[in-house]
Length: 192
Image (tube, rainbow, N blue to C red):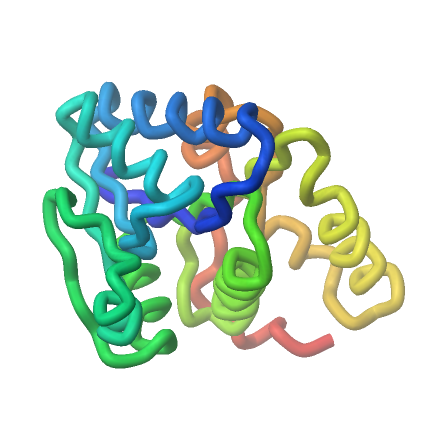
């Protein structure tokens, strides 16, 4: 494992425990000599992740659309900042650069990134591990919805193997290491 893509929030109004857990995750990755690629923002959990990685001498790369740089939303002290033109290009490049994907709690953008990664895995576009960090039960409703999709035959039972769920940052690396391998021929069973 060399590079992990992290999806997380830009909100500054969330509970302190989310910031604390994000800082721990950054330290864990830096201590394990794992690089991170993320959305490149300076606020909220994105900023905390970058700051904690940098403070621990870790390598963190941001991928951000030009319009966000124009708004000065980017973190200015990253190991590397890659400026792209569109949100679609940003998401594709982040996933392409990573060996695994981790989703911390977040809003619409984080949810959309996570669900798109799961969809890509279902379609065989990616096969890398996906870990959902379900702090404070934040993702309970989404996990329940995915389970319902299986129960109602919108997805196959095997598709529940596309992601791992943990509750703390300390569980992330072992969840990645122990994640179910995913068939590169996933398209053959993508539809139900």
